[in-house]
Length: 618
Image 1 (cartoon, rainbow, N blue to C red):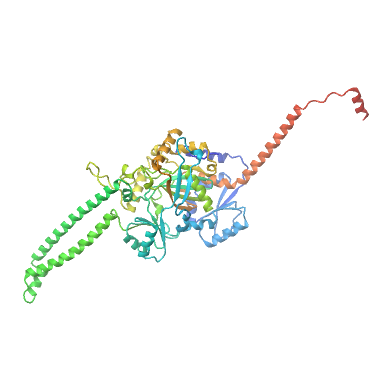
Image 2: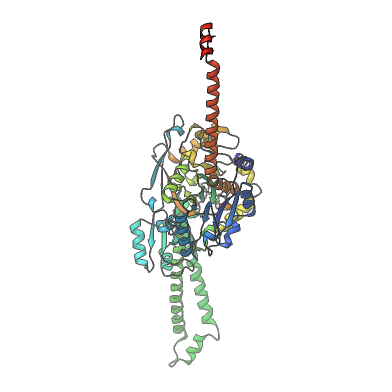
């Protein structure tokens, strides 16, 4: 059996064919009841009317479960899909599962516990992570097998009550450097569990540990920000099937500039020189304004200093009072100037960003405009897609490690391991390119390209605008872009990877209409550009795992969900049907063999007179 990889158009045709095949199935179906336990607000979001009707057409009843009523009174069930995080419900579910081992639970509460804490979510990948070797049957002639490593970005956890000094010490011990991402330690759906902050400076860290972040309080996980080109690869897993889509992601342009190799020094020098010139102009203007203000104040007829001079005992000279007033004004102006200089230095050090940026819900980036779309990554991001065989192997191992059947995970490609330097690519007006943002001007002295947005809010707004603007032309772009379809990864087939999988995998990376050869060449060039002749491994980061995610966000999710439901609803019936068919076939073969033997057997010789007389006597 071979893995399934399809282009966008072929994938849609395949889904329609799958739906038709499911409806045309002549297998005797007994209604299969699947319980669904979700929050009321999410029931019809995850299970819309189309899905309910499609399931019913295939002999499956999706029955919403009341978590306050005993399950014995609501069944019987063939399976239960659940995402309710309440102790009473979990206890009732586990007791029901013990009493009814024939009922499948997707997924058991104990399998989800590690995913509710970001400190344990992907802790098994800390350090060196997992290493994957490309299957030999997928290696193209003349190319060495790929070796990929998957781990998590450097991180540390700040416990409740941690102070600034302790937090800085933890960062140093872990090897973290600014900017870092701050995420709530708890990922169990409670208020604030979806928040995110970008900490740019020690001052921002001080604000964070002091509790000044409105919806992000300790304990938190500090994770190293890794420039990944603003592109995230999300893999949805439904049992033996996975679907990979591409999503827009948080992109800090100034980090791209610092990581762009040759342009780093130019960008830094340009920022420093421009900052010094700006400070000199500002100081000159402030000094001139202060002198003019002092002269006007001293010359004013009703000036307070003049009144004080007239009333001063001994008749102090007006010039002395004016000098004293100018000295005071100069000291005050100097203090303001020093404060402004410190702020300016801080702004230049962080690329014009504040100390701490907050997002109330990172999963809303860029809002819900990505629902039902296979690719919302920034156009021209230049990030190479992870090999399909790697995503298959990673999904298989995550299933075994977590014990989950319904989940998704996010993978990013560290751009510092991507050998095509980001400064060689242009920057789009929306900041989604991989150019040297914030760097020097053009080599010929012309104006530099427009800088990308320098804040999370601006980047999110730009990403949302880009998604809306690109919507009419999305279909045309997706036909010619590399790897922009949801790659259907059949995990059962992946375990027996074959030559057909290599050919199909090549089509994933190919241009539209390019065929197998074009796709294979494009994939080889793209992966060679990242791996390079002397690099031993390709590095990827796993950054998040979520159980029972919003499958409605991926294209054609109803067909995939029905396919998953059928995989266990009618598995026993299918096995029985197959066994009966095998028995019937075996019986027919035996009967046919007997007939053939009878036809080939020699006829008995005719009996002689003596033998016939003996038979008559008997």
